[in-house]
Amino acid sequence: AKYVAPAADIDLEVLPSAGSSENVQRLRYEPGVKFALVQSDVYQAYINQGASGHAEAARIIRPLRVILPLYNEEIYFIARADAPYNYVHEIRDAKINVGLLRSGTAMSATTLYRLMFDRPLPDANISFLSNEEALARLVTDKSIDVVVVVAGQPAKLLTDMKPEARALIKLLKLDPKHPASQAALKTYFPTSVRASLHPNLLTEDVPGLAVKAFLVTYDYNQSATQARLARFARSLCENFGTLQAEGHPKWKEVELAMPELGRGWAYFPPIAREFERCVAARALPAKAKSCTTEQKILGLCE
Image (cartoon, rainbow, N blue to C red):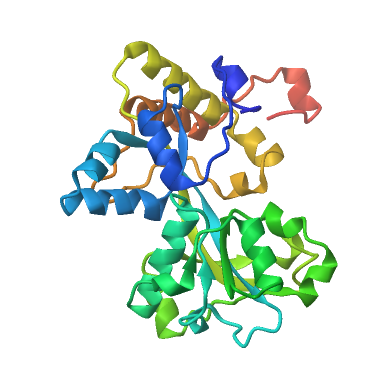
């Protein structure tokens, strides 16, 4: 908002939400919401539901359009420090908190479980509590064995922890060679949770999984709205270097590119055209400055 909106002459307010599923609903139906951050598995789940005959899912997702693929969001599996498992593929029979209903975390956690263990997460083993409440139960009454959190690193929930947390909790690792992990990696991405970003909790990097986040909008047809969104895209492109240098560390992972999307996905044409023009202009070599004879003699230019 700080680096892009002013130059685009738009007011951009960041709203709290429960996650990707709620973001999709609000973008679709809530007046004034023009952008949403949506995880790739949530977006794809709506497409799949619509394709399988769910009319409401199809109605929700059909007019949504992608602005830009952004960054990977890490998926953290948090267990008690004394838990008998150290790897994600060992949690088949664990009691797992998957985050709030209608959240992207709930979708990612349940999808991952189904991929890894070839069955849905049993109702008796699933809970839908906030991260904070779930972590409290994890270490106090132990009614929860694993808390799943989805957040781009550095994850504030983890960075805010004191060093004493190491005695209470641990992050489970991904073993990419295990068959269950390989099944998950067909949809999700390998990553590494870096100790340098979470020094109070980790002493070494932890191999893990991630899901891609996308910036999404609606297929607006009013010319004034299209013009405002095009200005936003132009400002994002022109200020991209500042975003990467001064914004959230995750911006360093973002590329100004529009890779081919899967079936049922589509870019928003007015923004896509603006990005194409801006990216092409950025790629042009800088025009050479003319040199005076004196400057050439002094070796100031060639």
